[in-house]
Image (cartoon, rainbow, N blue to C red; front, side, top):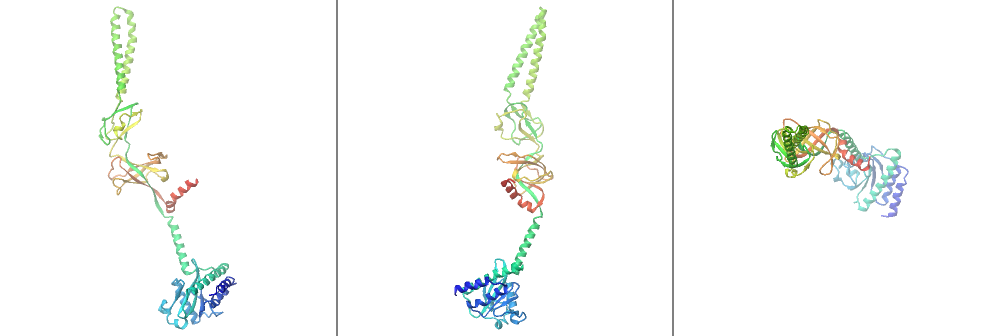
Length: 434
């Protein structure tokens, strides 16, 4: 096959001034490079548009009618480039095959990517070589670009039914996905949580000092009046002893003055000052004993003691009002969740909460949001989180204090689009600073 002639033929197709001229060159002048009996060009819907060696078409001619049926079958079959024999066709097309067709047909679609502008059908008795099929495919590609250019200029650029169906299907899927994006879905967040007491009694230090003894153990049952802890009272005991000795000295001195006043009336005037000192010492002793009593802290309600390791508390200095432990009612508990800043969602009292405990993740404990903190606080792992408190629903088993797990907190319903893109948009906003 002469490459110069081939290039000249491709150039002529590209320079054609109309669709008919381009089709005429492609169907007739290719014979010099690849001989055939007949060449046909069909439209995307199967109608015959051009036949080699014929300037006009008789649409009702039997040959043209058979070609229409043959082309429509191959288009509906989505036939790619191939050499086709009679056995490759349905039996309904066999009777007229011997009258109009040859042994071998070469089917070459005129398409690129998803755009289909028809096909070329080459008929001859001999087999087709790989070089000939490659050449004719190149001819069809060149014809495609020329036909597409003319159709674009006329605004009639067409797509094959096969690809048009695909586009319609993709468009339908896109519209469906767009509509699905507005489906309301529940918005929720997962965060670590634990079971904490509801309104426990806070056991605080009544004065500045050092913890001397812890009389209870963690989770120990206590009753009202149970001694919980003692502060170091050695310094106060010494002060009380000194104050009592001073009182005793003043009282002895008063007795001596009273006895001397019987013999020396002038000494009687000293009694007033000594009585004042005695009253001052008694007041001091009363105050010190009151402070001494506050070194012992007692439970004011029944419940369980909630505290850390007692051995770590002993010897620790505390300030007045500092929390040391708490007394909680085991039957009055709630959920404490820690919602990280990055996962924060809008919460309102009454939102549903489900707690999945680590000891039994298959069961959930239901509750309702009681309140959510407006300010985030640092956590033990260095992150910032909002505190969320939730009360437990009634008629369910009360979990043990201190159990930890994961809480799922609901926050109403949002569109599926928002649910999918909430986090990516948040990351993008934080990254670019908008």
